[in-house]
Length: 311
Image 1 (tube, rainbow, N blue to C red):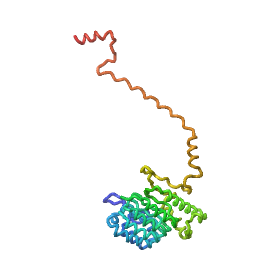
Image 2: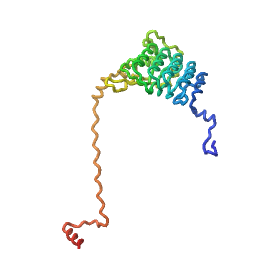
Image 3: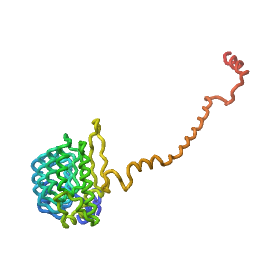
């Protein structure tokens, strides 16, 4: 109905619910719902939360304790919440035993190599997380020590499909191969094929309950998971590392090698040259001066006209 005072349309509560308007969660409400294992809280978005930014050291331990026993939340977004290495350690402790969370976004915080190492240690036992975002950490750069921690985690982790971060290491290809392996395992699981030949030594296949849970949580990550990172070249310039192909091959894509694609591009006929544009039309003649009759005197009459004007 319309309000006679403001001239705006007032919506009733059932109408708001039907429109599925999402209200921003407060930190306290999110902790309470996570601790109560609310089945409706599937995605918990606390990005840019002012309370967490001011009281991260007090709120994150409570949030981690609530997350450790939660079985319904599939996505947790803590972007720009002023989290440091100590906060990452608390979240890693919860992540080690929580096999239900599929996406964890920690972008834009203050997580360094120490905090990332804690998360990597949790991934050794975690079998639920599929996407991890550690991009744009303030004042921190992930290097070889972080790379070693994550490659060690993949000795037992077969579920993480995507890492979004900036990694400065010349050995990043090692992590690329491990992510490609996990993506191939995920594809075989989705198609019902055997993947035992891809399992690391001593790692058991996923339980049927975990397989079912992953299929329902796949909507929280992009359909084509890949590694997004940067490596440092020999001259110190940064260059983007290409994402691993979805087919699981390290170099080739769709059965065509790089050399064949380059050769085909070189043999392709070049397009005909484009015709030059037509020249612009000549400018119009200037208008005659004011008071001129439009008839110019001949050359013989010009001295007489000049003498008459002088007299």
